[in-house]
Image 1 (cartoon, rainbow, N blue to C red):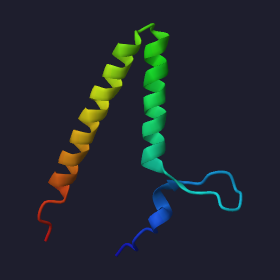
Image 2 (cartoon, helix red, strand yellow):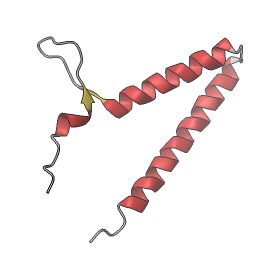
Image 3 (cartoon, helix red, strand yellow):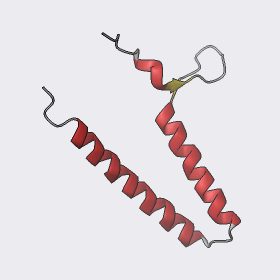
Length: 78
């Protein structure tokens, strides 16, 4: 039987200073992906409206995909 993981197991440790907050890993990944997409689209000389539209639509699709995935895996476990 596996032991439950501590609540801070999916966090990234910042610099070792007193009072350094732990950053949640999924949030860090999302920020890095959004910044990479923005820089990539800007490097290909896309206009600002295209960059915003791509990131907005991608974010909405990701949220819906995550919600449906969570709903499927959490449905009536016995």
